[in-house]
Image (cartoon, rainbow, N blue to C red; front, side, top):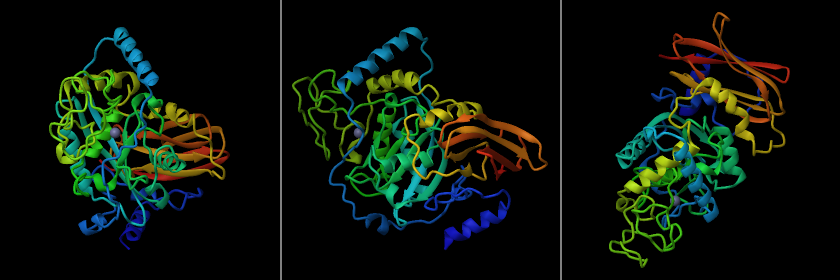
Length: 421
Ligand SMILES: [Zn+2]
């Protein structure tokens, strides 16, 4: 089979490092993960007929982003106000780097690289003029039937994100799968957890990518969910009751609009319902705009709650943040020491090195050249049990093979990393 052949090829190319770790067998090997240029992408293309045959009917848009409480929104409002009083205004917006995670179930959901590229293009078009740009940083593919059907707030979601999320403070982790509860997608607001928490990111139905299943097949679901990720509420938030969606230039709307109901007007306040707004529930073809007020809202929120989003990931910063990733996650029973190595690998520029600790203790993670010279100390700290990652930024290091060595719990494990420039 194609995948197996690929694993073998890469395994031969990287015939180095020990594999003492008992990795979860459900996970696709790290080596299948793609680098920026798709060098290691599994190129299994699902024919259109199969995409359409998933048997999941999207009768109407259904977003699973948890509805914020009024008290929550009030606290966000005062934090943003305080921040803007205490800080000079800075250049709004920036480039959001996307770590794209394709989750498949029985081979279903294996969206093509072309669809992923088209989705990123759609995001850049829909967000043009907002100050936000999107760039594909990495693509990885994982087969897991349970994660494929995950829903918000469940153990499946937590497990998938703990295993797959890359550096949430500096990356938008975007997952495709086929969520249960007939959901098209969901996200978490910037204020819902510390920026480095793995829960952050956006999950969308794989059939909502461009080329998916009508009427949600133009990639607008990602635009909508990323709107939440960037701090925007549904246009029908709060119905006709002020402050509604906390944005002045989106007319009040009593309930979600479906299809494309031009002239719909559900509230006594002025203005027809904002049915063309990306934060409503209309069909993809009907969604065409963000307002200036929404852009301003997002740009006031991001510096407060996602201050690291546009900064390039630094190895040291990632290492310092590692303990925070699991502050609210209970270690699972049966967790074993696992060293997953770099993702992507081979890599250009930087790669995330991941491992799982069964218990807390001192951990060191160092990178050596093939001649045994220490080139980086990525981590030398006491860490709690759970999944961790540290970024290895190659900087001006020459192309070639390096070894990342993890020392934890009296065990030493090494993995080869291939830097390609
Ligand atoms: Zn939504």
